[in-house]
Image (cartoon, rainbow, N blue to C red; front, side, top):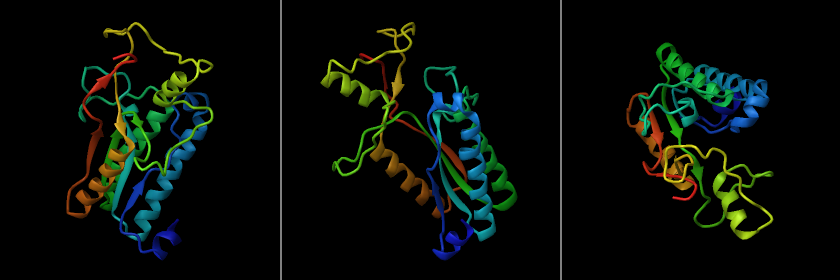
Length: 204
């Protein structure tokens, strides 16, 4: 990692790499702590050793845990309920202390339910098995052999299901570019939620 950062004269890092399935993280936490946390600490050490002082980190709304209000802003208490959320929060905290000790400036971007694919149709994401809601709903609509399961029907909403905010991957990509511009133009370390501010339940 250090050799690569030096060879290409890297100015800043945008860190997307992680294992990201909540259920899997509960079943196999050792993998999540090693891949998400230990490997990221290795990246941060390589940045310190090569003099790179800017990073945009892809975090997650899973750092918040169970919502304690209808709308989650960046000051909502962070109490993760999975190893996935815990590892992401641990990295956020490490960034704070690496910033204080080594002068690293960072932006943490906390996603709310990324969805969609490249609008030109050239890039997309395929899971086998599929775990994301929107592709599963589309599959169910196209084939009666692929029913959709809805977990949780006792929420205080119009249809009893959870309300979620979805953001398109193109908007996420743009947000990362803007975060990098923010840092390179002198912006200080910060954390931002990424969503639309509009919630949707299973049928509404």
